[in-house]
Length: 143
Image 1: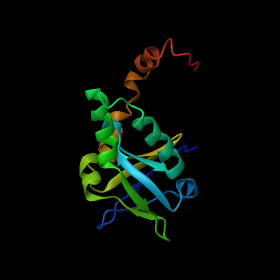
Image 2: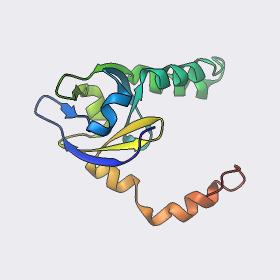
Image 3: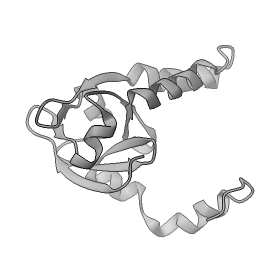
């Protein structure tokens, strides 16, 4: 499981140093794809396989399901971590996430989220947390 939040910098080549706390769990090879709210999702290969299986079960006849599959699958890239713990974030994914320089790397239980600092601040405002928690009422989640 991935927990915690770390700030880092993209180098001139678009490489990001993966926080030491996440390296072993992500593994030498892992998948990065477009995520929700303008971030990127990074999955260890076993978690990616589970996610991929769920996506493959969505009905091909449903237009919204096809859109969801297309969103995640077409943005997915197999990435390798080098010996210094760096990963090259593909240019198309950096553009999608608005990543210029400062990046927030956040554990999100089964995946890692990669955010531009600006989008992270915008998306993680605690102003609406009470409303978000209330929206989960009835889902059998005790907080």
